Image (cartoon, rainbow, N blue to C red; front, side):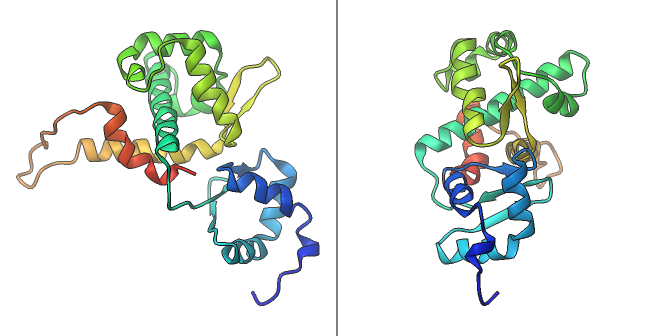
Length: 206
């Protein structure tokens, strides 16, 4: 693309402001999504000139590919991924379809307390020990990254960008069960979940 007509990028300021903070723009953000979708080539070219790489995930969201994660954000990503892991296990144990429930069910304080009770040792590694802390530090923080929304009742509902963290969990699980060259199940030392998962979530950090 040789020329970029800035007049066509009516929401450039707002789109840039959100993406540079690590926000994921999905179909839930109707106006911004529509502009990115219709002007994708122009935005990709413009952001490339600014030193950013705009990516579009086929599951329905845009985000910046960031190569320099910070220690703080690494911890946040691990907290997000751990919470998804615990939610999936909770829904499965409740006899529900885990993946469908992730997007259909609302996350309230009672559920946060249940997750803490069932996985206290894992959350303690990330200095989260109460349901209120989990709600504030994980699920409410997800709102700032466009991977969840707040419902009319004040609860949290996950959005499609959460798939990035699900991908990290899938990669983590695959690595943990990879067979050895002898064809047997590879024996792996089990460090803290938080430390192990960090390698899979580094690429998610913004």
